[in-house]
Image 1: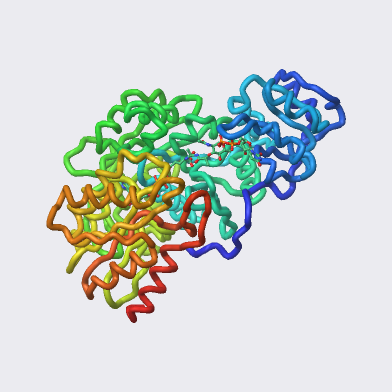
Image 2: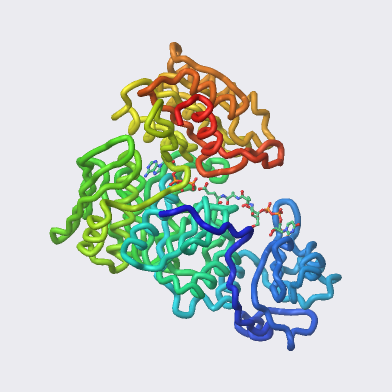
Length: 517
Ligand SMILES: CC(=O)N[C@H]1[C@@H](OP(=O)(O)OP(=O)(O)OC[C@H]2O[C@@H](n3ccc(=O)[nH]c3=O)[C@H](O)[C@@H]2O)O[C@H](CO)[C@@H](O)[C@@H]1O[C@H](C)C(=O)N[C@@H](C)C(=O)N[C@H](CCC(=O)O)C(=O)O
Ligand SMILES: Nc1ncnc2c1ncn2[C@@H]1O[C@H](COP(=O)(O)OP(=O)(O)OP(=O)(O)O)[C@@H](O)[C@H]1O
């Protein structure tokens, strides 16, 4: 898969929207309203006054910082023709002079309203949804790559980008708000996209972001420690994910049952489920077995009911990427694709032809240390990536990492300890400190690493550019540098400011400076 040739600045929306009458919307959903609605037509929906397009219905949603309805005047000046909000919002929106449509809970109404405005329930494409703590982005890209190899026009929505063919926009959230989701689906329909792969975060399920769609097949990767700032404990986090595996959300599911969480999901899901095991010794309908693990690829065999069998390779590091690929393939089989047809296409192309930006991405050339840039920012991701590298590393493993500020702080000790146990040299740096004190975050990571392995060689370098160069200074030919955290991102977030920084570009530059590239 190639890099996008065109990078549009904002969300994907239909180029030729077909307007619908506001009175039709009011009748369809039995809503109250204020102001004249008879002649009003809406052609789009937006919940941000800063991204309004002419003809939009502006959604005034209450938030943590403000009530969106207080921006109704700004929305009007940008071309909004009406406001949908709650009772409190109706007061705030009144002075904009726009007609106001009222619902009791804006978030709850949003998905169905957006689906109605964009007509996304009429002849929808095949929808594939992926959830789990780690691997969602990877599975979505693998789905899209295999569909491309099968000659199917597909779309994808991930943490990194939303994409139709060579048209891509950068994502702000892992799963878009319902307004953006339905606008994207409408745009995809214009492009005759027949299958769409969408990453579904727990937060999206908890916040009604995927309301108004029913997935044909959903997939579960795994569940491990993350987001315990949003959820009280792992049980609550699990329950948020479980919501996707219910009849109002999806028709069928493929669940990876390597862990207890997977087995529990199978037991508590209320839709037909097919099981997949990607670790040895686990019973499931489909099993994935590794046949080769190398620095630049992983090979595996996938076997399922009725002697279904496929052997292929993915040009990425680690058993977990083979596990992600296996999940993607079984999801496609559940969506109606024949495993032999998939096998034939993959054999023809020498394996899965996928590029995933910033996921175990090998950015070094043929000389010097191997350098991977990885989006892994959870204990489980660290553990898996380090274990995968250890299998083929000829020399030392040097790990560069930091931890997110203003996000689940309870995972930092495990991250520090796992880094120290799994690598030979640790370089702790800053990673989006946001409004936290970066030195305090680093101190926790360094302390945890030191406590786990007192003799470990540890460096603390605040500036990520200098940290990578510190790692490079300790590296020799045959060593491996794993820079975990930043992945595809092109910024470094400090005290509310997003400073330009791409770990991939900077690491390439540093390799050139060192004469390795
Ligand atoms: C905690 C949370 O979910 N916050 C979301 C929430 O923000 P908020 O309540 O702070 O909004 P606010 O600033 O009070 O504004 C209220 C309303 O006014 C609107 N507004 C505000 C200012 C303005 O000038 N004009 C305007 O229209 C806003 O668009 C919003 O609709 O509503 C916003 C509008 O959609 C979201 O962008 C925002 O997600 C933030 C960015 C976020 O970080 N969410 C996280 C928790 C999240 O969802 N993460 C998962 C990650 C999963 C993973 O790592 O795997 C995800 O799916 O991305
Ligand atoms: N199946 C897996 N099991 C465990 N770890 C994985 C798996 N797949 C990927 N990882 C690790 O997790 C990191 C993030 O992968 P990916 O972006 O695909 O996950 P994600 O679920 O989309 O996360 P996010 O929503 O935060 O983007 C990878 O860079 C890798 O380190």
